[in-house]
Amino acid sequence: MNNKSRNGLMMIAGGYLVYLGIKLMRDVMNEDVGNSLIFLICAVFFMVVGALIVFYYVKNMIKLNAQESDAAEEEEEAEGIESAEEAQDIVEEIEAEESQETAAEDQAE
Image (cartoon, rainbow, N blue to C red):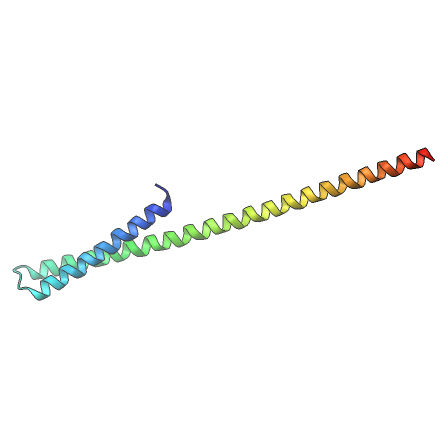
């Protein structure tokens, strides 16, 4: 599993924890439960942990995308440099051939 997939799944899991916390809090508020304080503490804990997980993995996803775009830019620059070097080599070869042809013409005269 690559990093993008892992980050996506962890964001979904964090979102689910937030959802469970909200649902638990609504259920405790709507019904008269014996240990409502404990359930409310658990609901808040689920929401906080879920939000932290989502925040952390969203930050990781943004950092990963930035690294990939930087790597792509560097690769494009490297290809551009290689293309420029190849073009310079071709120009040098053509100039060498032309100088050989002119030298051969001068000798023929």
